Image (cartoon, rainbow over all chains, first blue to last red; front, side, top):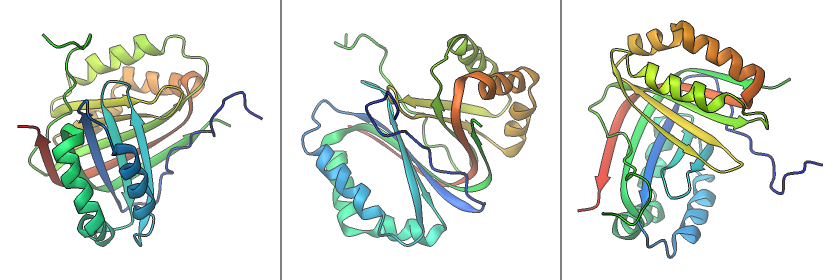
Length: 117
Length: 117
């Protein structure tokens, strides 16, 4: 057993290119009521998208959040982008939770993984 | 003046595609001696690469770190990848600082920014 209280963190693996990443960087507002529930719901929902490969998230306390979603192809991303519940969450995010954000959608050309032996 | 003790966080902007992102997700080891100094040096060094656009970083305490570097084109990324001091830092990272990491290099096709009015 580990001496950490949480499950070990494992980043999404380096898949064989091509695949897509959606890089979402956020600065939050002070009002985060309802955010956790919606975020958990989105994390569940995206798993149902065919071609969804995984998601990584890091959050500096009081600072920047970065979420990276990995998708097999552009169609998978389009399906996720058009999901009605996801669109409603985006609207609420703009209205309440985000001070600013940036989204970069990109096609992976090269990937590489390292794990300590 | 803000009531925050740190400068306001601003994510790297949504540039006009195409441009490149390098998504670097990391899980650290317990031994982080020398990491901060090397990381600061790399942050300085990458700014000298022609075509470097910016960098975002988020770190969940005790969890995942995500660094995203933004570059105008593949040549800029190649120059950074081949930088001798950067390569030495990568070697030391594998030997000492990283439990695991994944790198995804991708060409941005679409970007979008939002800032609260």
